[in-house]
Image 1 (tube, helix red, strand yellow):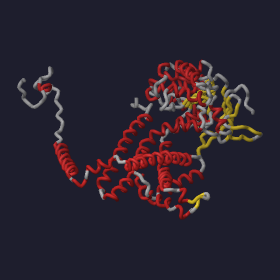
Image 2 (cartoon, chains in turn blue, orange; image 1 turned 45 degrees about the vertical axis):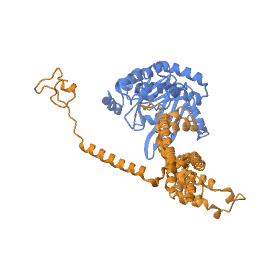
Image 3 (cartoon, helix red, strand yellow; image 1 turned 90 degrees about the vertical axis):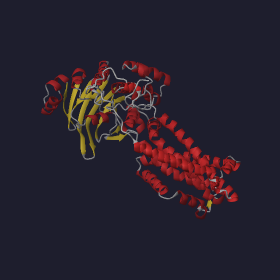
Image 4 (cartoon, helix red, strand yellow; image 1 turned 120 degrees about the vertical axis):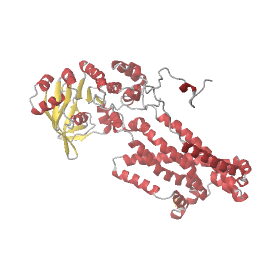
Length: 257
Length: 290
């Protein structure tokens, strides 16, 4: 393995095609432990696909990704990458939390059942212990009183906070957020961003795909701007957001700011 | 009672405090008169009454014979066979159907084709033909594993095998439709949480698929209960065959058919009520369910 030891996430020359469409055209990115990376870019720029390759929901066609020093989805032998069996990929995923745009809570399970499902079945935690941990997590996202509710009884913002608690229940080393506030009514965006900010200040390594420029400015250590499957520029928010060097970044920011 | 100027109920004829004679009064809404609706209802009720009275007064129905045979031992034995045959065929049919659905949705093109071929074969021929075919299977294979086919496959076994294989083809499509109705994001969420394939299917996909599976499965259950009557042609003593045995001896065809009819209708009605509760269970967590 050639991944430098100081990076939590290492992405090297990743390519991904959907049929004849090139979605990712050579992505290189490093994320250090405890860092918050925000990925910005127009629709179709490949930012969500990139995020999904990090926990192997999408397979890469070329290149490699490592998380915490371990290749994701493959085993390297000499100059070949052998695809891992599903069981091994699933084990890797328990170290990577993923929060979806549409929450994807399990609608037939209560809030607490949603949260303990993975700890109990994937990590083999005793149920009682998992429930206690879930209650602490719910308190942390401000929903201590909603443990026995079903997802449909909650607002969008509450559902997304449950989804974040569910991802945290596996105690992941890395959290990935795929446009976590895009499906929310405007007045509910703040409560979800507050939870994410709180996690960021607590030192969780995270990569966030979002359209919230204000959030990026406030929380991000690194802002990455993507377009047409490539990283156009990256750097601290003060540089990328306020003094972009690339014309494409300036054009995008002038439309969304 | 105060004098009324029109036919309105007292509350609206009593002047509200803001009522004036001019345009400023809030106008009252008068619904349209539904004369046609009343006429149609009366006409249909009269026709129903006529039909009912003819049924009651026509002695050929022989209601006393219906009552005397309704709960005889041979009828009840036939009913019992119909009930357990239905249950066995539903359980085995859905087990095989679920397997076929999983094969069809698997990534393996050979398994997909086999599943598709099975459904095609058993859906495109009448169940009557299939049953007669199994009844004569001895002509094709006189022995199975060294045992004479006629000994191995009695009429009841043939009924179970024939109905189950037919049922499975339909069940496969019902289960497949249910699985496809579950949002893709649900599986992705389960994958991202590290849940294994079996756990994902049993804990996440299947319970949600059941909401789409239960209504057509309820239809199939009722259809199967009635459909088992077809086994009477291969001399399996189900409910229909039991009453046929009696009327071939006594020639009381109509009252004995009524005995079977009442039992079929009674049991299917109970099943419909049961389906409501099963649907409510699988709708838990959806808006308006609690």
